[in-house]
Image (cartoon, rainbow, N blue to C red; front, side, top):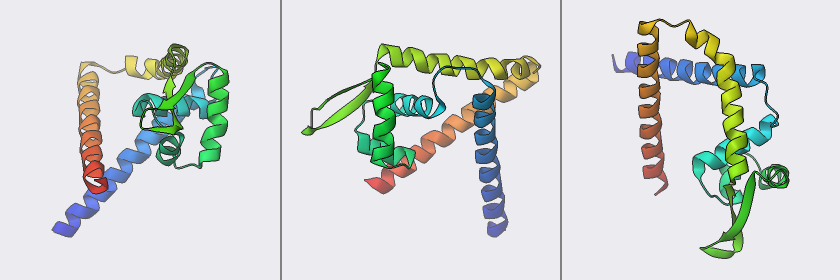
Length: 154
């Protein structure tokens, strides 16, 4: 019985991750926005993590510091991020979004939503209620996963 529960949980977890990733990729692929995808991802990461060092961004993106630095130069040249001295270490800098970066990211998010909106509009009241519950469950999973990660790293 325990093994069946583990297998079901593994399968459900994999299905959730695959479906969420496919939906996100589909929305990005079909949306029209002016921000290159890699740069949009970086802006979203800085938005999610808040002001961060390059090393933190690279680790969170599972990429190298030189890769993140290359993208940072591009978004910095566009005026979407700023680097400031790290208050904890004068040798390091912290990257944060500018107002222009927040606006660029908001534009990307609006464009992705615009391609999904026709499908969302087809949902009836029950479908919209199910969507709200799904979003709540995903947010609960994110909180639990974040707490579990915080406990293992501290």
